[in-house]
Length: 291
Ligand code: CNA
Image 1 (cartoon, helix red, strand yellow):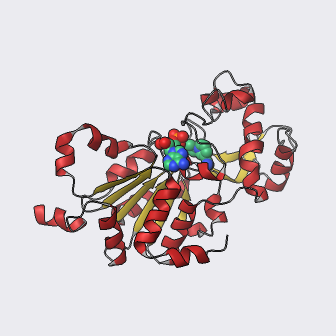
Image 2 (tube, rainbow, N blue to C red):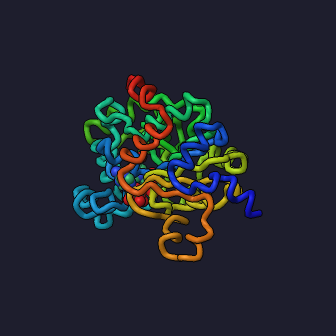
Image 3 (tube, protein in one colour):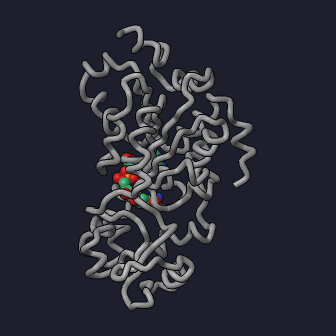
């Protein structure tokens, strides 16, 4: 009903309406969906931005004819070198601590500290969530991560110390059977981890506020989570450009007129995160995070 719709954000369909809902305790089961954009300011390129891994400038450095195949299983079998060079240049610095969590990661941590984080579903494989002190239980790495790995032929679990040792000297990590060891990141065409399938349905049903940050929302089934929340669930996008349903609002006036629950904070993720921190009155807690 109209009344139910208005009550979602108290008729205030903007970021202040979202912040008020959190401050007043109406939103206490927050699901946060994240993508590569939240780690860009830390120094990790995303896929699809002009200076992303799919670009000629960045991806092209690795000698691939098509950088968009960097995370393609067939490509990994054929020529594993480019993928592992990307691992060394882009993801190894997280392991050594040279790359640090961003304000957006810290905001997610604060949602956890305040007891209102139901779950963070991340498409990222960089495990900066863990560096930000977000509890393992609160994070679902929807596209896997570098936390574990296995042999591509005998399936033996990898020792990730050995894996990174090999990657760091720019060689291809090898199993004792002689085959290539890969990290448990989800390549295109592979199924999503069990932890994702085990939790998403219940989490999405329970969630009262959905925050989407730093993703182009083009990879499925992850992107479809946005459409699966209840009609009474508020949705906030923090991203450089309007994507998914937020893009439709820009294109279709009738949708815009009927909008009672969707808010977009367009711009850099860090700016959006800090704006929200301030609106929530969490600045001191933010400064106190020692990461
Ligand atoms: P994507 O398709 O590259 O989209 C990134 C989105 O973030 C775009 O909409 C950008 O406009 C936006 N964006 C980029 N930088 C910023 C910024 N500083 N502030 C605000 N918005 C920004 O990446 P997706 O995550 O949507 O695609 C899913 C893939 C990317 C997943 O399967 C990941 O494994 C994969 N990936 C992960 C990482 C990582 O772990 N950090 C890095 C690169 C790719």
